[in-house]
Amino acid sequence: AVYGPAPSVDVEQPDFELELRWQADAYRHRVEDIGDESLSVEERGDIVGTLTERLSVMKQIKEQGPADNESTYAEIMSEYVSNAMAEDPPNFKKAEDVLRRTIMLLDS
Image (tube, rainbow, N blue to C red; front, side, top):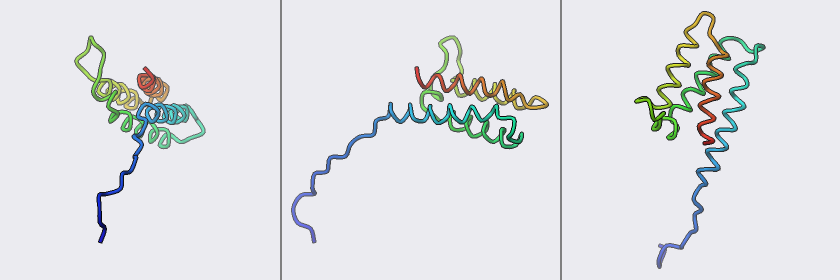
């Protein structure tokens, strides 16, 4: 049995701004892989899909949007990336550009 009050533990709160910056840097490196033509179409498509999914759930991206538009950045990004990937062949350059611009929003 333990007697007395619980010990006081100083738990450091995570630095969310630092975490956000780290994620943006990691995503920036991944975006560069989209342009790597030595990867298969499937591998590049997987990178596009993963980045789109991960960026879509980030608070800043899923809750905000341009002032002159009713859509969130996540909705806009998803639509543009979907359209780029639906082209035949998939327009990786366009998808890469949209994802790169979305990541830039994390730094603003």
